[in-house]
Length: 129
Length: 360
Image (cartoon, rainbow over all chains, first blue to last red; front, side, top):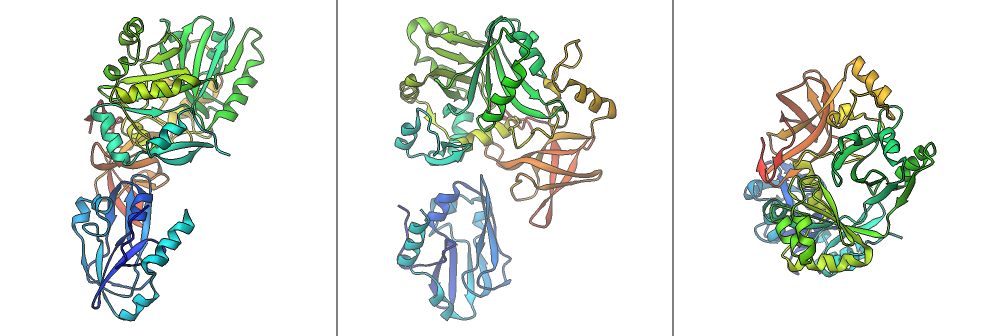
């Protein structure tokens, strides 16, 4: 059973969001990294770019396939995890820590209310199985 | 309802992630595909390849039958136990399948074909058999098959044989096979490493697998098998070649025995293609920019477009590599279109990796 931390919010497409003030840190869930297998390449968004909730902003590639990942909220990219360029396996090893992907300064922090909480996300991945 | 090999429970016990492969429920990895890949390059790993199809061709006509069927010539097999890689072609020179044939004795050849192509292959083998009254074809679904591969594979695998049986296995030359008790052991594989492919009765599979585990050989999934064969520059049927592509544009010209008198199915079409001039070539690509080459991506060259047939990440090189079919004569740099961007790649000689070492 994969790990779903209760303090995080989620998209059903397996992105997680840590909200601190008006900054959202985004990564992909433990369940997603398990499904994908060993990651070998991550294409991150451009810093300072504006993104809308639902945009495909990053691509993560495992040995077997490339997967789009989506911005959970609208705002500006203020930081990306450049360590992932050389060490994409951080997402496998520590999806909720060293494997974070980027931070968004949110335009409308109320948008987080549209995201799934840990229980709802757990339910959604159990339905998939 | 998917089919299970005799080792299915062993895979589940080892926490394998299982996937459907051509109707079989097979392990893709047991935790980390990349670790399994490195293990085969550095030590030894084993693969359950019991889903592959084994057909014995026996009888006085077996040799003549195979000489008509195969584009490589089994007359090259002078020593009992010797193996040969070949394609079987259709009349247009397209590849029906690729296979390994073992010469056991003059009226006994063992052919190992792919699993995904089993049904059409069996139909093709039977159809071509009608002209040969003294031929018997028997599918051996009573055998399982384990591939043990890696620099330490032979040493570790030898421990599973009883004292009296070890010597013939130990002395096997490359691409040679021997019957050892109920086992049939070939020094062959699909990883670019040394090792054995071991056939055994279905009810021996679990104890053989366990014996190899006890000898320190770790199970590896089909995921690692695919990146290993790609680094070794070995084609995958259905991906790198199929019934619409000839061996001449699939990097398999070396398997064609064209020069002698012998006729074989597809030979005329191949000769016509050679006379016209072969238009495409199979090459290796190494991606210079960041990203991962994938199957079907477009390759842009200064003499027209080509296509990636197999692309992935090479764990040994730490770069992305691919097999690609591109216009003949192209060397040097090309570009690959990934998500509407053109990324730079180098055309290189195949293989990318040989016995654990980079060739590029």
